[in-house]
Length: 285
Image (tube, helix red, strand yellow):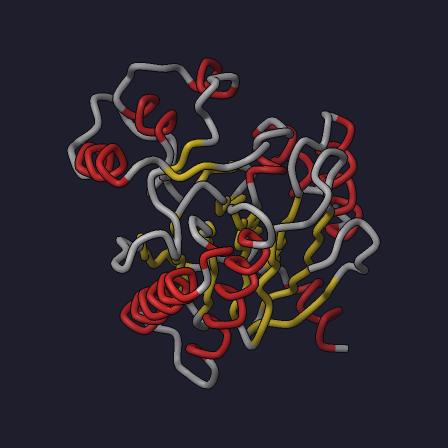
């Protein structure tokens, strides 16, 4: 499904609501096409694998998988012509370049995303064919004991810990805000006609508000970062089951298959990271 950024006036109003206390508890604390081979990489004491697929409707893949050093994540682009691909690839390449050789800190992550945002904004000002382009961005950047999470848009990060799955990012979208305000239920939001309107994106304005948080790591944790082509197609409980599979490679493959089985209306991308001894040893071999 095509993604849209809300007008500046409406988006700013909704961002103001995001910063107000919700009226009910939140659920969370807050690139080629189908033929591309899976990528497997190492991060400090983590085992990591990724997938991306063009889906069954779109002609091109506007998602970009981010893997480099210990950084991992997803950028989901939007924009006419090749704008979405340009934005997501630019966010990926710019962020990897900005953070190369740096120690993970919240300030470093936030600053890098802000600089990447400004670069994409300047790029579309120079090229009218890229006008209106932007991208979501959700990344994990681990230290030895903690996980830094940087987030803009409606791609998501999930944490599976002790059998419980929780969304650890907050969607920056109109319907997500309406859920947080108690106006819509999650079930209503899933089919709302404006569910693909986001209130924040990288590259659509010269300044950006970035959500950065730091969570403790724990042995046995499993982390998932994915575009809405996955979380919008596969139910949360099913994601939990697939993340918990003994063979995580098969779990990642099955996530893609089930998103396609549900219609594959968008590009589908994911990064799955395991903080488990057996898989760390496997990655080190």
